[in-house]
Length: 505
Image (cartoon, rainbow, N blue to C red):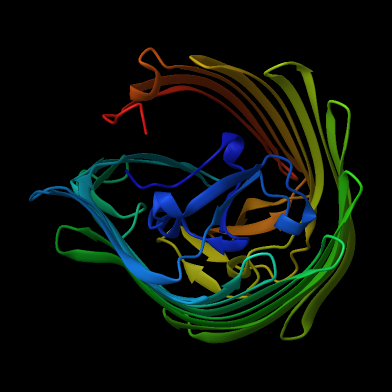
């Protein structure tokens, strides 16, 4: 329904057109007759940020004419809305192309939730059970881009893109409406919670690719972004005519970011050597009002240099690379600086025809979310407050994945197993201070996630009908400084696709 592309264990899939990063809406706008080939990179390296996979659509460039493409899926009613609309237009003239893309996704419905909360005070326990009423959920996402490209196949590609994205969430997933029952009163407490958020993102993306002698390629990319967010949260509790709690918090955020990257690629024999550097500089200002009033300024910078080699020896494809990073951020009188080395490796071995095994391992460094680094304290309800923590530190993770796949014309089977271990990750803590529970994020002990998936796919009617079934088992272990949580998740997903199209083309 949405056209998005995903893969096992939540790994990122990056889409590209002639090497330029693209959205799934831009892929949908391609005319099939203009696609020369599709390059699938299942072992992308540090150049792609260690994404799970990269799909690059290599297209021909028409010298004249244009295309107009639209897709509109509407499911509208008084209680539920599901909308996926897309429109694109392109005009070609010589080596140039102008294009416009716009997409709207809208989800709206009502639902009910159940809360069973227990607050363990030092001298007593307070138990609250909520009977929820129908609560609205509303989410709208609008994406648009205006694009100009100048392309000489085999020589150079220049692409400039102006993007605008709007996220409008009048009602969020954590909204609450209902009544709370507890032992301390015979009268229930009415509860109302609403979070509304509106985010506008503007970006200018300039990309240049030049083919040099002896199979060498130079790529340059510069991106400037501006993000503005308005966040409003309201929370009220009432008992009969009495107002027990009235909380309103507003956050206005502005973020400016500049990203620059240069990549050099050289084909050496049967392998490819890549080296590059990337720098990101950002400035964020958050203004808090309502029950808390304060202004926070945060500066961040991340510099990277990386290199990798991708080669093949017989039936084995392999990649080895490393990235050196400097991470810096500051807020008021608090600053953090960290240097990190992030190696990664991939290997794929074709055991027999159509049977391939793959293994990948990555050591990554993660920076805390900007929203966690403030030193602001905001009330959540009459028992809880949320407090920022500017003392948070970057943390590391080790990620591994093993995959075996066997594919035949009418069926295919695959097995994926992944393990992620985070060292001193940023996770939540709950403290008790002066009669109030304080929720804040801290660097904890560790986090573990083990997932395994079996994927079966058959095509009983070849190109006209495809059926897939994928049972998944996941185990999560969160080890905090003074707690441990475990969770096991088992699910099975299935998908069938029916195509009416001629076999002969």
